[in-house]
Amino acid sequence: MRGGSCLSTRARTHVVVVEDDPGIRMALVDNLGAEGYRVSAVRDLAAAFQSACAGGVDLVVLDRMLPDGDGLELLRALRRRGATVPVLMLTARGEESDRVAGLRVGADDYVVKPFSMAELRARVAAILKRTRLSAGVPIQIGAAELDVDARVLRRGGAAVELTRREFDLLAHLAGRPGRACTRGDLLDAVWGVGYEGGERVVDRFVVALRKKLEADPGRPRHLVTVPGVGYRLDP
Image (cartoon, rainbow, N blue to C red; front, side):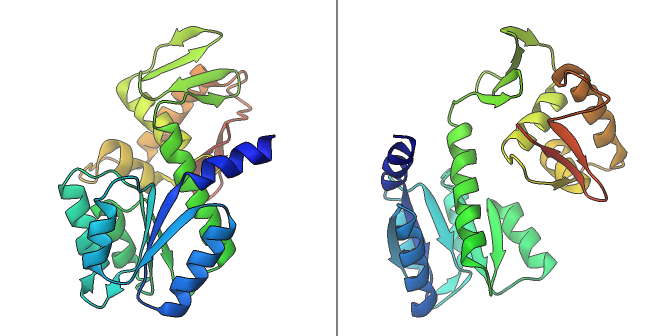
């Protein structure tokens, strides 16, 4: 029954692939279709914009170098219109400056060619999971429950008092379950790109959050340290 429910949900999930290379385009359609998603494919920006704005699209897999321009322009146009459809950039432009530009414009993830199809499928699933969680479904974190829409953390049915930064930090990590986030990433996402303070402010907030979230803050099970990287939330 669980497998059937999962497949039913995926069958209702519409993924638009924007890719001009026919071999890659077909591979994406076949692989994502085999996962149970409903997949549409286009090869240029004009068709992509029409598809993405038509409604009923749950995710866009977007190449950058397209026959009629840069896929980043489509992403900018969508975000200017207020469109929140998740976008996964898929491109051969893998320099750090390219990845940062895509993420800052509003991409939800960035995969560089050549890529592993298994990894891409996993990233698609992770983006869609985050999207559904942010759509109002409370996130279970051990004995606690995080309601992103209501901006409240509950333990044992009682609300736990969090500062705005504490909540934003926890919500950001909860939207990326099992994924390591660097202190720099967390600073940009929660404090803002222009924040000039040091990265150790993240550590202080994590310590405070653990006291409110963990049964044993000294031996955290959910808000864990990733040595040499940053932090990860294991719900």
